[in-house]
Length: 210
Image (cartoon, rainbow, N blue to C red; front, side, top):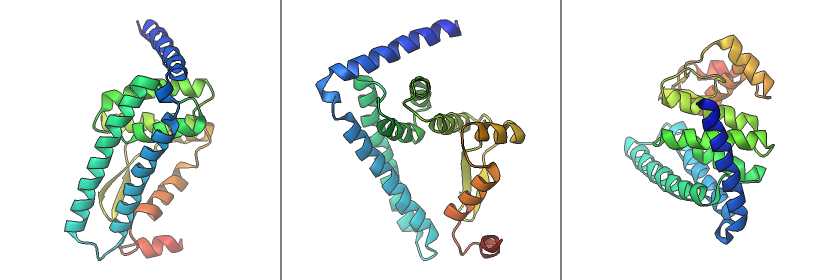
């Protein structure tokens, strides 16, 4: 049954790619995707800066979280419409933007799984990067309460604590990361702490010196 489903899905994916080439409204889908991805990154950068600022207030953080949710919701609706009408993007840059939007579509895990199937086909076609697929697979696993296979997802319980979400086997995770060109798990965890834990947190100064 699974083989049949994959075959049907690959056929649908090929049809979607063909339809994208035929529909005039899809000619500029890359520009639209990149604009949504830019908005996605902008609000997250604002949030990181606000969290890093010890003078930020709860009211400021709440207001930004509301804007964040609004942007993600609007992005998701537009992205789903683009995918339904145009299929998965056929260039590496546009595919990366599409991956980013799927990665942050946490309110619709069913759609994330659909996007993952399309991304898998794009990876096989040489359009998308395997690392994007690894990140999305881990994101879905985390959302579903399953262990990660590549160790790409963190949870931040508060502004001073960042934890790697559960993985199936740490040694296997290291091998999988190496196989697709991701940095070592240890370096990735250290980078996460540097990026997301503010410098005023206890222990952060000594950690930066090591």
